Length: 115
Length: 114
Image (tube, rainbow over the protein chains, first blue to last red):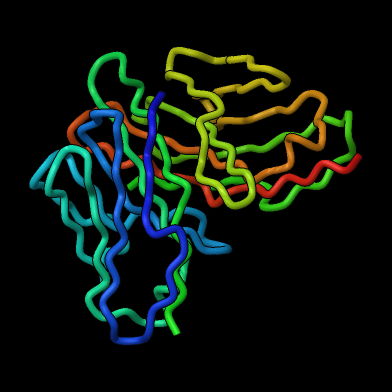
């Protein structure tokens, strides 16, 4: 069964600190995504990737970097965390191509609090 | 780009009642449509997917209707039960691969009272 895992599940960081959120998928999907979820905004796309070595900006990339070192792993990096980045972050994987249907498989989320 | 409006943002029904959530999209080239369910403290799980050529899909206790003319996608829970309480999201995507960025609605929080 498709599996996307995230670590850590909960994180408290200080303003100005560096935060790295990790995502691992065992689906062998080419595409991976990072979203943040906030009340009133739904899901907003931060960065995504088409495969190892690629990263693309989503709709709200400012203040975030992404890294895709392998097919399985996709990281979200906050170099200088700010309180406005307090949110729940979701990673997802998905495939493309005929028959793939493009549905996404989501991880359980990481709750990040920046103090 | 694609814009998706989802309504209502909150929905409260009694057990056994029906519940309807509607998404309206703007891009006529949208081809793949999805409904996701998010239970408290969890990620989104795929509930149903439909193609442009599919108008009605039925699942266990719910029906998805795609109206291409009005660019509307709806989720109808026919007899809601407390286990259906969750946040529901629609997602819409275009046909082309290689630049796949689905657009999500803002979600509907459904509460089903016993």
